[in-house]
Length: 243
Image (tube, rainbow, N blue to C red):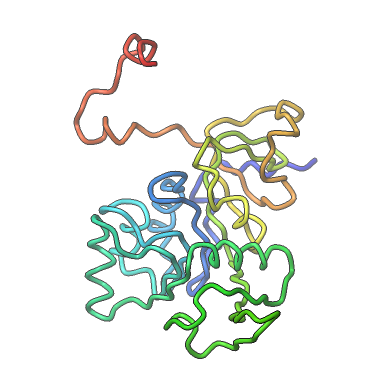
């Protein structure tokens, strides 16, 4: 019987090795698998290469992993934001390596890894510093840059619902990089807020088929960011009153 449900985040992350390349889902603060990132900090793996859309926000999640000194290199599209002070300090002091990748290229390089594509030519970044040292070619009169896939040892993604086979559905923008990252890693670990019986998920709503998922960890939904910062959460009556 196939059952990919893992009882704890600790068990799911136990074999993550030092030096691993970790694909981390999320776009800004949407869909970030913070419970898995916190578990990775506790697990202790070091010298990691992190692939994410940005380089962390504030002091939690990915920023906390960077602050703990566990990351050797980060591959991302948006390393600097108003609250990226952890990354900024590490980069300015030479304690972290950055590979800057345009967002479309980042998604396609990850997708290429999952699709078994050896490399591809893309016009983005031609004539810029991001193309330095890379092969270029003129195709039908247009300049292209050769890009290689980004493979992961582990993908950490956050989904909304799943079953014991690892089929996953996402909530709105939390979908972002999760589906392509799940295909591009040797081991994919997903957290879900709800585990449903086999057959309960509408096949048309399954975004990530279970064949790409190795471990599923049920977790409780965290308090909202508003509540976490000391403001009272909206009451059920207030929620119903919203348009």
